Length: 215
Image (cartoon, rainbow, N blue to C red; front, side):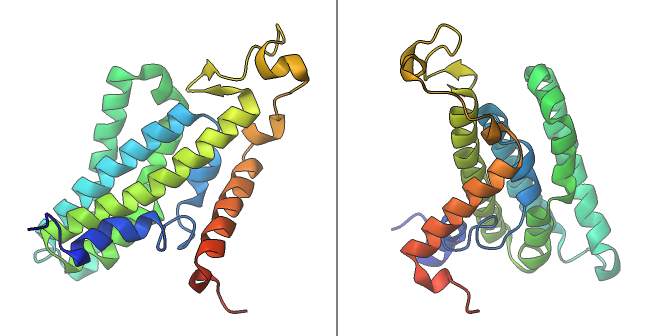
């Protein structure tokens, strides 16, 4: 017996490709621009959103029958704000330097339209199990794009991954730098993220032409 039915599996798999929250739904672009200059920051943000979205969807699903409709947005904000505070405190305890780099952007998870959208569109109308899977799936879809963008921006912009030189030493001119390679400074500024995301969107639509919108 399969662990997940096809319908439940699609809650996780669809956001990874044909219903990705960043490249298809065009949500959460701000963080893709802001924190992906370093791969480490991209990974930490992806994990943070995974926690907030997975747990948040479960909490909203549990409360869905008792939340008055007039204050549901306020309740959703309280839930996500509480989870973000937990994430922020954990980062300060175990990765203080990184927490200072991400401090503003971790706080902005509270207003991340992907999270609020899944609370409103899915968790309020579905059970705990499916809401959890939906949260995990959309968070993974979001995180995968952040990590891809962070990988190429740090590699091409700084010649490092997770802060570790992988292309050689640009000062001593070793590795690729010995044959004239230079880091592309454009890659570490926010507009570069739009270009990388645009390339990902182009690749997706090239592989699945059904995703191309009619003019």
